[in-house]
Structures are given as structure tokens and as C-alpha cells.
Length: 468
Ligand code: CTP
Image (cartoon, rainbow, N blue to C red):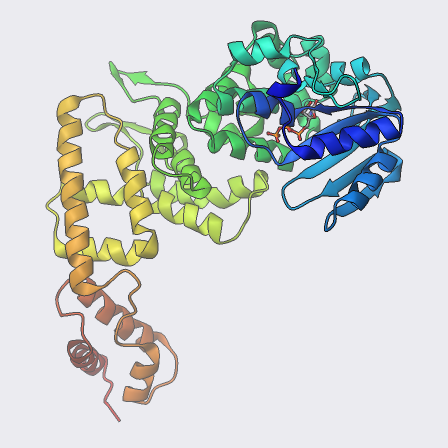
């Protein structure tokens, strides 16, 4: 079996040390799984029967330039090389306390160790011991599940999930990343044990959410989160998008499935996590702004504005960064209707200029979001939107080339206004500055210093100010 695995000399080297120290050791977990999935992995986990720290220390001595660290209390050690992070840990048995994900740990056999793991695909072990080098141990048929694309727990799924409820998120995340199916008993167990997610930290939940969002087709994960009832617990605002209401035979579209379609659409074009978050949140305020009007039917007026204002609360709840990433998501949520509204009307230069000014460097991302938002099944409408949309794109390019508005600062600054009229900071400075900027954006005057200066003088005059 040796030939099919572990060509890397590092494993021979570890094996030699294992023999010298009269121990048993196995490569385990994600590295083995990823090897069979033909995915490159940097993290190698090695389970040792006996003292893993000694083994790691010796290895580090033989690898010049490597880092070595150990944690005596946990019996674990880490060797870091330029290419790999190798973690050594003693085989263990675990027993869980109901209120915590942190188990009580005792030394155990390899079988104990594999049984305590989350999924059969993560419970494969490769022997590094002399005489058995490269042999695969697969007590739970993990290889079969890998080939058949199945997520299954090695032990009773209710116990596996209840012991460590983060595994519910991991199951859904692996299913989404790898396009696997969660086996039926497991799925049922997640539904039964969902409330246990309450003992998991927000950071860890969000970490898994981000991995779902970064998967090739994130909707798979969100549908599973919704169907199992987890979504309502971890992300209630998104859960609320689900459902269709009907009044007098008129219904609106289901905003949950629409949002997922937009997220999948955008994921085909970008790996930018925050742009994908913007897609997930673009309609988040639709439930809060929904109204039925006898003449207009269903409306969601102001959902872009309210949605943008909901973003900080959601980011805080989910422990996402409250920095420029959040501001970027807020901005895209706020502006997400603008290009399409523009596309539905006659596309004037001034509207395009204004959009460019407000979106700045994020204009391309905004356009991508907007394009992903076209999910109508009506072919006629789709073609019309796309055509108008392309017109906006062309116009954007033209106006940008002509006026350079993208990172634009109006030619008349507050400083200049104060100096010209000999005034101190105050209301009038703002009035003049805004007026000049708006006049340029509206195309009433050209985007140049001379015209802006003249307009400043005129507006000042109107306000009773005189140049000094
Ligand atoms: N594991 C587990 N339960 C968890 C987390 C991890 O049983 N909640 C086990 C699994 O056997 C897993 C191994 O510990 O393969 C290593 O975990 P980790 O490095 O977190 O994840 P990987 O499986 O390597 O995958 P990824 O890096 O994609 O998270």
C-alpha cells in the first residue's frame, strides 16, 4: 500500500524515529482525507501511542530551521517547517460534560481515538510504524464514504453532535465545500440536537459560516442550515427572509431563495468574502419594510437604506470585523438598487456621474452585485434588464474616461472658500461646497477649477459674502 501514499521523505523520517523510540504513530484526520480528495494540505496531524512530545522534539532537531513548541498539559507538540505544520498528539479517549465543548481527556487506544472523531471521512489513519508503513486503517469505512460523497459520524450521531455541537456546522460546511450529502440519520440528529449550538462560541460558528460562504455553491449550506433549524438560531435575520405572502391573489417572491440565488451567482465571479457577504445581506431588510398596497401590490420601500443600517448589528452579533470591511458591505447594500434603477430609466450622464461618485473604487463590485441580482425567470424581462444594464456599464466607462469621478475630490475645497471670503468654519462653507459639488455632478457646470471657482463666487454673493 505504501506506494499510493506518502511519497514525502518527511514521513519516512518520522517513521524512523517512531521505530527508534519503539512507538506507534499514525497520520490522521484532515490530511488523509484531503490526500484522497487530491487536495493539498499544509496541516498534518499525527497521533502517537505513547509520548508524542519526545518524538516531535527529535524530529525538530533533525529539521534545521524548523520551530518546535509543546504543551505539556495537553500532551501535544508542534513542529513547523516552511512547508508543513505537524501536530503530534497522544491517542485519546474523551468524555464530555453537558455544558461545554471541552471534553475530559484520557489516554486511549487508536480505536478510541478514531471513534471520538466527527466524521468517518476524518477518521482514516495511515500507519507510520515500522513494518506497517503506509497501511491504511479505516475502521468506519471512511474511504467508501469519501468515494460516495457521504458525511456520516463514526458513532451514534446524536451523541457525536451533542458532545461537540460545532460538528453540526462542520457537517454542513463539509457538505457544502465538497458537495457531499449528509446521511439521513445524521441529518435527523442535527435537527434533534440543534439547540445545543447554544454552547458554541459565536466566533467558531462564524468561522464555519465564512467557509460555507466561500464554497463554490454556498446555497447548499444555507439550505441545510435552514432545513435543520440551525439558521433560525444562529442568524435569525436571514431566516426571516423565508416565505411568501399572498393578498388578493398577489404574492411576492421568496426572498430567502432569491438571496441564495444571488449569492450563488456572485460566487461564480468572485472569491471576495465581503462581496459575497454583501450579496447575502442585500435584501436583509425586506421583511422589515414589506407593505401591501392596493394599487402597487407588494413594496419594500427603503429596504436598501434600512438594510445598510442593519449591517453593524448583524456584524456585531456574528463577531465579524467592525472595520472598513463592514463599511464596504454597508455601502454595497445601500447602493445595490442604483445601477438597476438607472438601467430602467433613461441613462443620463449626471445620474451615472453621481453613482460613480458615491461608489468610488467599489463601482465594479457594485455592478457585479447588481448583475447577480437579476434572477427573474421571465426571459423577456431578463433580456431587457441585461441590455439596459450593459448600457449603464458602457456609460460608466464613458463618463469615467471623460470626468474621472471615481476618486474625485471637487475642485473647490472648504479651505479655498474660507480663504476667498475671509470667513471661519461654519454653515456657509458647507452650503457653498455642497452646491458646487452637486452642480458638477448634475452636469450644470464642467468638472474644472475655473467654472467651479466662478460658481463659488456667485453662490457666496447670494449668501451676502464678498471676496476679500
Ligand atoms: N475533529 C473532530 N471534531 C471537531 C473538530 C475536529 O472530531 N469539532 C477531528 C477530525 O478528525 C478532524 C481533526 O480533528 O479531521 C482535525 O481537525 P481540524 O484541523 O479542525 O479540521 P480538518 O478536518 O483538518 O479540516 P479543516 O482544516 O477543513 O477544518
